[in-house]
Length: 176
Image 1 (cartoon, helix red, strand yellow):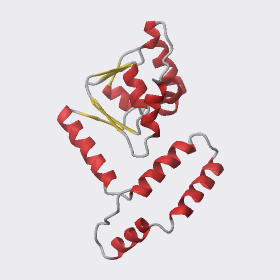
Image 2 (tube, helix red, strand yellow; image 1 turned 135 degrees about the horizontal axis):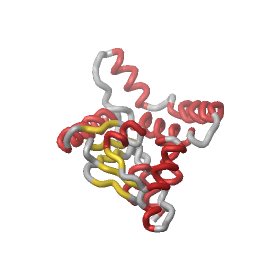
Image 3 (cartoon, helix red, strand yellow; image 1 turned 90 degrees about the vertical axis):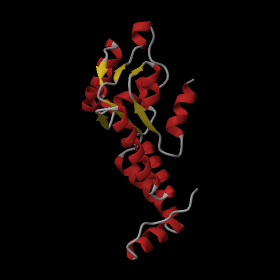
């Protein structure tokens, strides 16, 4: 099960979580493995495992502290307290909290579309660097991104991006 949840984080493409209604226990495990999280204001969340005499074991306890801060993660995991979509936004668990499911769906679609218009190499590279940099010093992270980008300097995506800028048009990138 742990590998199944971690597969979301390891997916080369960005994974967007869209939450409305309840997100409890394993739901928190899943969304913390996602790259971007949005919800409705009336969504509610709970790290529920402690109420079941268990420690969350699919990634919440490993991922949540870097998302909401150690103290907030500790309090939420130890109390199993239910919190709202608005509080999830305040904590940084979600990027945005929408008024309705329809607005949520539109917001998710807009973000997915915005990402889809970018160079696939740049999107994958950015996700890779962000995930890898969590475990590196700033200097190590800078070395990693420099190495990654040096391999991409000869890509057709870079040429297309520059040409599109010069020609004042939207770039058209090849799929990976």
